[in-house]
Length: 253
Image (cartoon, rainbow, N blue to C red):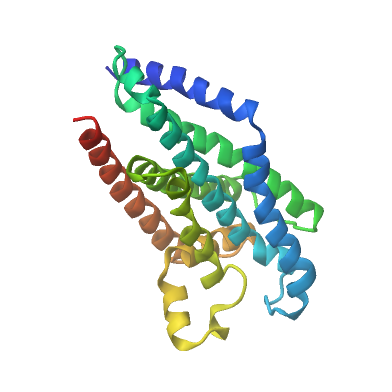
């Protein structure tokens, strides 16, 4: 049964990835906005922002990577919505394939596409002066956290794609997620924020994820931030996956 699901998912994943390869503008568009933000903050605002002893591009990068993922997942919702509207999902379900493979193919596509966008943004950051002495294990930990974050948000995107009533609605859910890093420690120290804003910034998921990645890349102890970050990612993942599975069953009941 497991082999059957993996085989079906692999075939549908290849189909989705071919669509991405034929439309590389999705990856370019996903990376373009974070790169624009990075250029804006490094060269326009960076000189007036206190980021401690490290270069501002180093301080900024973790938040930019999260924005890259948050903007990229909207395409997952968009592609799933188009498949649903076009009737291709119903045609797939009429075939002797695992039903879950339809959704997992979109999830796999999101992981590959977002990893590519993150790599592009990271390369631009290096050109802007980003440097890290972190070892292989630290980089693997960063990659793991970003992958888990992407997986969690992708299932949120799947839920949005299943629930949307229009193309615009399928992508609109990602806007608040993209804005979350701006009310966190991604760009400025939270100590500079007014009381209520500080309280929100300190206790929302982006701050713990940003701090974990930042400390790993700077070769500093991560403390409890990593456990808070993992708890947020796993919690969102489980909730979004459960709700998406229920929405999928209801839609085709």
